[in-house]
Image 1 (cartoon, rainbow, N blue to C red):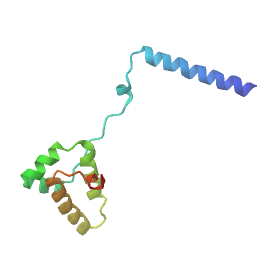
Image 2 (tube, rainbow, N blue to C red):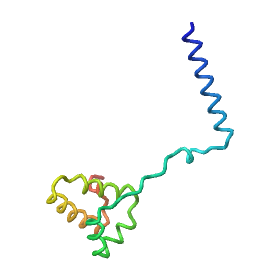
Image 3 (cartoon, rainbow, N blue to C red):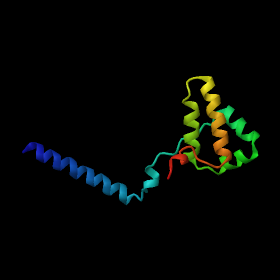
Image 4 (tube, rainbow, N blue to C red):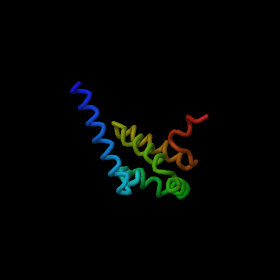
Length: 105
């Protein structure tokens, strides 16, 4: 019986806290942490800037598309793999294709 009272008390406390937060005017956007700044590897950025068409597409990509490319390139363990992925990424970006777009039907 004590456990039930404790759970009710804890629940009641949480509801009271929620009411206070709601009355304070807090919005969901206020609670969401800011998005991390995407750090683009300098070798990828330099490669993209040399190609006007690729750079234009890169600038138009949303955060998620850019993040997919950056993670794919930075996950490479060997330098040769990284260079190959940058070359592949340049071709795909030049065409305006997101990293995972090739899997879409």
